[in-house]
Figure 1: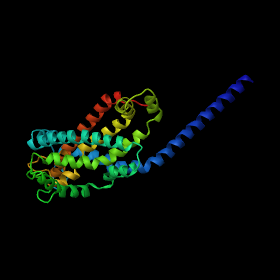
Figure 2: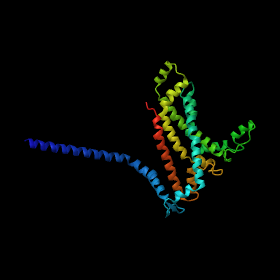
Figure 3: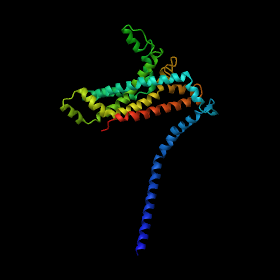
Figure 4: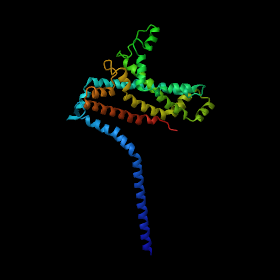
Length: 312
């Protein structure tokens, strides 16, 4: 009797375990079916191009991009010995140094102002975020007119004070700074909105407690606002840093990498080698190097920067 009961209980346990496995398998299949469109999309537009780029970086290619001769690491050795690539690398880091801090500081300043409870502040929020709705091409044309050496408003304004006209996009001393200024203006809208959302999510009781203690405005900004905004700042800095390394549109529209390659960032160098010189192997090697740089800096930022992030 006992043996029969034990056998029956064992069979029931096996049936329950089998049913659980079938349920897990069924749920897994359902989940994969839901993910299938995304997997197909990412495979076609992300994974395959990435694998193909790494593959081509080890080959010489013909004008149509088909690999012809395997050269191993020669493409990487060639570009690191190229003065043009080294200059584009330096230009890219300078561009990032100009645009990332400038975008963050200006956007944070505008977000702090727009977070104040003042009459008509909604209009200013709309103005500050309006650049987010402007395409890179349209914004570049706008700044091209501003930077025009004779008809540009900037030089006309400077002429009022007796300052000679500046070749904003034609002078090697000013070209990279001019492109950086236009890029900061283009990025302010998105960064401003994200930071404003972060400011509005901070609990008001923190400020009320500080007011009771007699804390001043700048003390609250330093001790409450910035620490509580640190997760949003961390996200914004990461995204802005990655976007800065991938900048292409405004460089192509405003300067085409000139004058004297002073604004030829890495992405524009990749474009020039691939679609102007038809050297897809060299361009792919540069793309791999850019990926490694962005990945390394992002991991470094997560390693060092996240320690200072204060989560509520």
